[in-house]
Amino acid sequence: MKIFKDRVAVITGGGSGFGREFALIGARLGMKLVLADVQQDALDKVKSELEAQGAQVLAMRCDVRHAEEVQALADATMQRFGAVHLVFNNAGVGSGGLIWENTQADWEWVLGVNLWGVIHGVRIFTNLMLECAKKDPAYEGHIVNTASMAGLLNAPTMGVYNVSKHAVVSLTETLYQDLALAEAPIGASVLCPYFVPTGISQSQRNRPDDVASGVATASQKASQAMSDKAVSSGKVTAQEVAEKTFDAIRDAQFYIFSHPAALGNVQERMEDIITQRNPGDPYKAAPHIRDMLRAKMKAV
Image: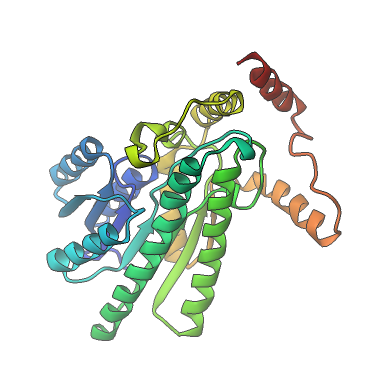
């Protein structure tokens, strides 16, 4: 996808973090923007910010766990703008702790947003984009699914999140291959950020009542503290990652990494698999982190 001006971009999780930055770049490029988020105040703020810059914006509260709400978002997009060219399935939440301590509600919430949100986005918007392509011989489209380095690695106390993001990587790789097989004029990319200062570590603030959390365990409290520290201390900004993402769309690049240096850990994991050796020590390069996490789990 080379042309952005006057094209329509749909962004879930558009009220903050990567979603907001995607929207700001899209506005700068002259795109028409559709923003979805569960946090109404953040959504309203970004909408006002973009409209002040002259952008055409449709903003809708949308819980991507629910197919009917994603369908309503697609219907509203077509009614307002008549087409869709770029889709960011970006909404995401996080939850940690020892994997056997995660409740059913934890699994339903994280998989509902991180995985089912992407499933609904791909299922609904890809079909819509293909219909748009039939009407426009010059059509170009692209889908970006936000996964994580956690979709390529398996750090302790991040089990629910890891599972959701591994599934998104697999889904997006398959989407890429299926689009190529069908000779569709639509590209696909998977974004795998590492520790970037966004609101992901504080996603409990938007957790719905129907999947409310129980009393946090020691491991969940320790994991939250470590996640807060790692995310807040990240040196790569959400804006920089968003710029990389738009560059990748232009270049038809599939894998997008905020921290390419972390790929050494991915290589080690692949070698573990290929050589059939047991999974390696995730704290080999930084054993003090394991010690800190253990200490926090015992102290809580």
